[in-house]
Image (cartoon, rainbow, N blue to C red; front, side, top):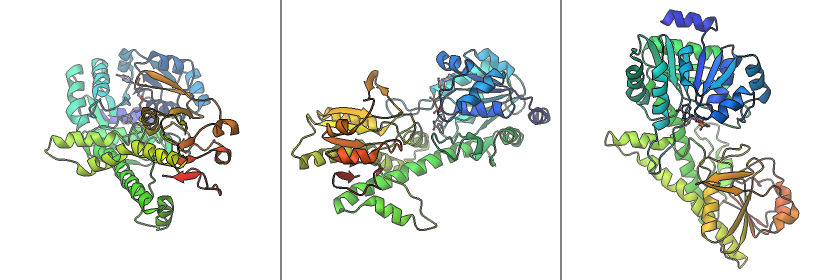
Length: 437
Ligand SMILES: NC(=O)c1ccc[n+]([C@@H]2O[C@H](COP(=O)([O-])OP(=O)(O)OC[C@H]3O[C@@H](n4cnc5c(N)ncnc54)[C@H](O)[C@@H]3O)[C@@H](O)[C@H]2O)c1
């Protein structure tokens, strides 16, 4: 099987299937197709499938013309019909791995997609899970499901591995194509073949590790590292405010050290599909071993409190104007979970808005990338523009995303008060009406 697949990779005869056409899957499908591999995307959402098949892009990191050209050339197509799995030799699974309402891993998307794949899996296929998950998922969950559903044997009839996705939406330098990738598969041959496949597609280092569990754990380490460091810096932000020390200046000073320090910044909380969720996959798995991941818990306690803390701070600023949050007009600037993207999943800004509304504030928001958002079945419409009169009509502006396409000079010149949780106005000279987190 190894030689046969290696030859197919070299001759670009491998047909690729990408399961889950979201923020991770669509860019990956486009890269595979661009590299000369005929690619089929699989998704349960027929709207996404229709968009792809009509050459319409819906993911910020994908270039519209690239997608259209690949579809027109017949290199990329999409379907909801999993029976086409029988036609592919390489399958990348990129489905969501969220938490349930009790903050426990919801592995159902991985499970359901694997069951569908297993029904149509054929011999000599490579299967790679890319979704972030707890160490053990590939060997303990995917392998038996694939073997059971297909009657095929892992290592003999198909290869199985894990290769974590590292896409950083909105990153202008590092995209799917040039970000180094880690590959860990079941068996040496599987690792070699799967790594060879990625090497043919990507312009980056492909780092092979000795098992899927190593690759699964390294991905959680990356995200837990960020989560914990952000927790540390958020805690210091609360302390520094009490001590009347500007933490942003402290971090800028600390990062002049050329080694041993990496800068992290405070904010209104964690957002996105990864950093706030993935460490809980590890905490959950750790309990199977009677182990408590205390660093993760401590950091989560701090990070989860940040939206509430920011609302408290906004209330204190209003207090200085003899105003209460109750009945005040508040404009929240930016609801994306990070700057210059249109993704608001897990965004702390939404929690800031909810908390403000609970305190009786009249809250509106402006986000150039997100005209409206849906949360708990309810849609909130943003205001469609900001100008001096609009800014002046609010009691306080709370900045919750550091979008770069907002005229912050205009905001500063017209706002009564500003609470800047992202220090996005750091270069503005007149700071009379600005308070930072
Ligand atoms: N978004 C990121 O920045 C990022 C970065 C690194 C890793 N990841 C990880 O990658 C995985 C995917 O994340 P995403 O952001 O692309 O999610 P997403 O929600 O944008 O996309 C997932 C897609 O999978 C589809 N899907 C769900 N169930 C399916 C099924 N049974 N069969 C086929 N398709 C199905 C959904 O319809 C959706 O289109 C997650 O594990 C995430 O943690 C995400």
